[in-house]
Image (cartoon, rainbow, N blue to C red; front, top):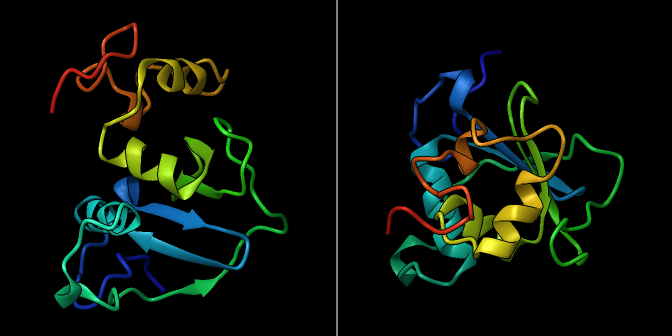
Length: 137
């Protein structure tokens, strides 16, 4: 079985850029385009015509309940398919990461993880400067 985006009718199947969101109960696999839609839904920024989100939900692949690295609240695991970069974030902070709206202190906290650097796509220096200030809007 090849991995592909779980958004209905999306055939995107490039594993190198697919993302997984897993809350310990269920997981979804999404392409970059539909990850933005998922993040906008978290923030309540989608119109009612988009509901319910047409996403295939799978059984969780993790044996624990994640805790947000920033707030210490209940969270989700957000990672690359191949596990190159992994974040434990609340859904609200996941939306900020995906939509490139982290504040500088949250950026610095996430970048300080020894397994991450500015080459991690979501923290790339095209999106934030070295102080964590957004480079794009």
